[in-house]
Image (cartoon, rainbow, N blue to C red; front, side):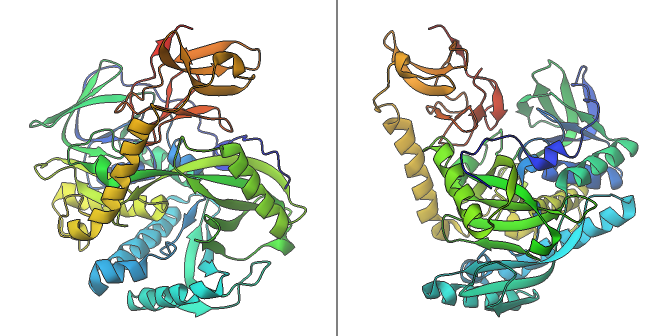
Length: 507
């Protein structure tokens, strides 16, 4: 791998063709359940509900599994960095056990689906490690190993790994999995349709009427009437329980390249050090070569120089995996809850037929599969042991959550006010391929100059809640630092919670 990183797209999206586009919703529809979002959580919920005998319609703003799920590192594990010791302290030993059990059963369930449907998705069983190199952090991983074992997981403290450098200590959890998420989910979508489920692409949802029944309105002009509605849009497009105040967006970068079978690191690794470093490999070809996948450099969207972050990550990969030829570079986005645990369940305290799945904190594959099973149980009236753990309405953790919540909202307020006070560069200073929020004619404009020198101007106000966007030069996108909405240089929505494009402006 070398530096001067060029972002060229997700390996998963490039190696799992999506087939012919599905049509947008063209006429009003009446079903048992409407699912908004066709990522891992939405498709898992829709498939489980269809298997339970419900008629289901999935509404996706883009293409199936081509959003956040298409950019994951694709680790399917219960080992979520240093989560169990924190859960033991904040939710008690029983809360940690429920979290471990729910995530473990999700992975076992996914393995069963792969076998049942005969999905060729490069499924591999691997051990998962959270490691540290600094001796003063060894006690953290020892405590995590103890907490994970107490929660019922096959966890142990080790000092030897398959990494090409020494570690001070690591938590090892055996029997986890990795796979090709797009091949899995596109097979799941095909089976959903074979069971009578409907999937509509290029269908942006704009409204939700929580009547009896509910009604979902879309940008196509058509609507879906349903008894129950699941909002699985990663960051919720509706906020009826102050969820926005309890969620924060986080972006991470990925570089990947080819290694021989003899350089396989035989495991999935992550460290909280160095602003996160995550490493694994995936099968690449019949010759036994592997794809080395390195993830890290997490940051808030719309802040700082993403190109510099890509270069740091590539330099780290160069140092520890020299000679690897980089083939791919992309970025992914996660949503962190202020109290560690995802929010899966009723959309708000008064909800009876609307549900949400969000806040997976970087572990959306096991979390999304878990969410599909949990939401199906709630819609069909079944009992689920961990409903209370993931309930978005939870109030008992409010005191413990308060410091993180206040920190999150202070950061949002800082951007909302402070970004309006920043000096704005002149338009003439923009080189080709760059963008910036500038002042022109007494107003602020988000201006991008393409490679031919043509200027494209849009409003810098995010259409979600009005924060000012900033330009991500590595990915050539406008990003909102408050809640993570992302827009193309033409203002079109790339990622929510915004559902409307940035307004066009003349310059």
